[in-house]
Amino acid sequence: MFGELLVNEVHRRKVGAGTLALVLAAFGALALAIADSIGGLMQQITDGFPDALTTFIGADAPGGYVVGEMFSLIFPVAVVVFAVLVGAGSLAGEERDGTMAIVSAQPVTRTQVLWAKATGVVLSLVLVVGLNWVVMAAFVTADATELTLAGLTGGTLHLLFLGLTMASLAFAVAAATGRPGLAGAVAGGIAVVAYLMATMLPVAGLESWARLSPWYYYLGRSDPLTHGADLADLGLLAAITTVCTTVAVLTFRTRDLKG
Picture 1 (cartoon, one colour):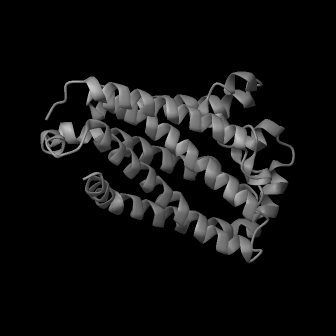
Picture 2 (cartoon, rainbow, N blue to C red):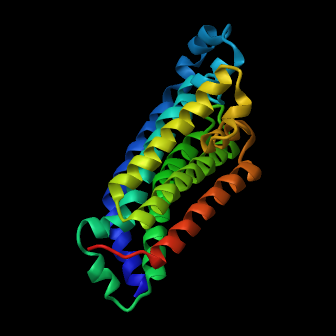
């Protein structure tokens, strides 16, 4: 029965995840196609900028400003918004739609229901970032950009783990309350604050405070686009995801379900 729940969850998410995956892949291909052509101009413009500001706008990324902008703004914002919406609606959406009684009446435990939903969220995020990696890797291996395959893989892994972190936060609030709107609002609000902390505080010379933000461990600390994946940063994001998932399991087991 767990397998049927998982298949149903994947089926429900395939259109949204597939559409976002195709859109991001198209943007990624476009970014790498034009990166070199405008790289020189952006280099001249940003030569006199402070290092923190250059990092903030992504001008120091391998492949230049266009690649940096994709990975510092467009990709993470799109993935985090998707992660929050799916994390908030995957489990609590059943209660909102009045279908939780049908799901829970099946020969499955609450924990199995939760893990089927959580696995569906993970697979959706893997599809979104995975397709983007495949398309961009074709450009990288053709030496069409300064971005290396290790850098692309590192940035993609960090992007995936950032999405999982924010999805798990929304998932935990949804599991505890049964209210997808509240879960989306809480997780979305935290995501916005985390983004502002990670991007604005270093510019203001307050990088030590930026370390409190999960978003900081996406690109801010180890620069995975240059150095590849950083296991310490990924481990920290994975730890936050684990804590949030544990909260989801514990609260969902004991709460009175609606719908």
